[in-house]
Image (tube, rainbow, N blue to C red; front, side, top):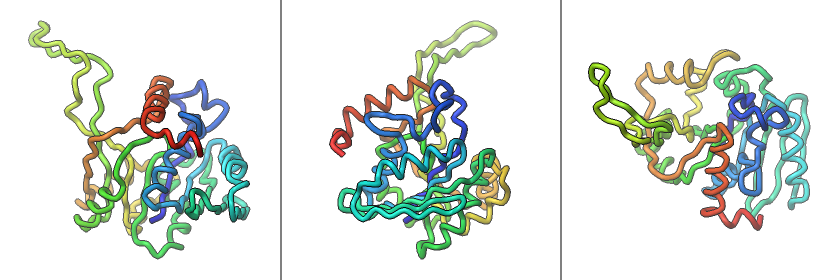
Length: 258
């Protein structure tokens, strides 16, 4: 299955670093976070990537060309708004298409702009995820869930700890005070599996995937939720980066030698 990664945003919540580079190129551990994410997909046999670039897309293009130019069977093809590269990495063939989907295009619009690259695949389904977070999600289990439900759209949902203490009051008198309790609500964890027919719900450049496209899918009652209870962490600030650095150090030591 092809893997679509959303990597074109401004990264405004992490301006101390994203003024210079796009957020997916921020190093965690020893490499950019997007590399670790792609390595996770490749571990499960999914190494055909379509990366939706936008903000500082030229730096994204440059990183991938420079990083993998020395690999076996490296091939580069340049077009006006996209490049494709292929190479052998860890005994597997990687194919990567990086597309400049526009500076101000919203997430749903970015997906819409790469639909032609998806149509080249005989696979009906594809992965979609954000390029600024990591997880130890078992992609085989997710794929089986999607297949068993005969789903057209599956989203991975996760629970995260509250960042702050929670206070319950009654008539302005504190009844309970809980320091950072577990959150009772699930959030969107990315790691979608989508059927290509879902592309009809992405229509315009200013479509936001979460607030425009997903509600259209939900209204058809065809969106399934896969619960992931393992590690999951997005990277929205420096403290998140520290958590990811620590996790990679303790759990993905083999990355150090790649």
